[in-house]
Length: 101
Image 1 (cartoon, rainbow, N blue to C red):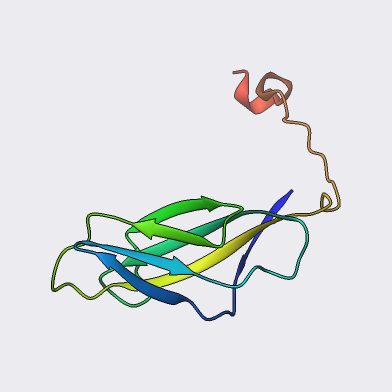
Image 2 (cartoon, helix red, strand yellow):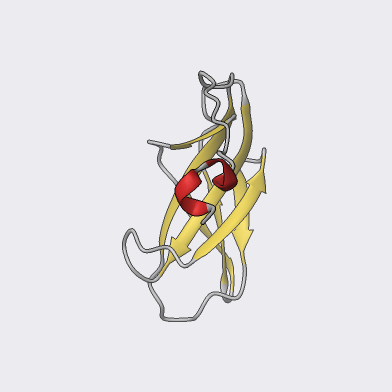
């Protein structure tokens, strides 16, 4: 099972050239982190773009629009044990007399 957690961390941004920025963050203290995802877009909490950073704690985003303001957030993907399991058998519709007429 994979869980995604919003990181309560401080992102740092470095202007690395025209139309690109590099974002960095602290590693999540959970040791089972399998991936980080960067979300960004032109409106707060409305992210049009998602980028995987793998297990890295920084990523460079290219092709940014000059003069545009962007909002960024990062989540960590943490692999954990499976949840409790349930089962369900899909019923055969022909076993229901009302459906066989």
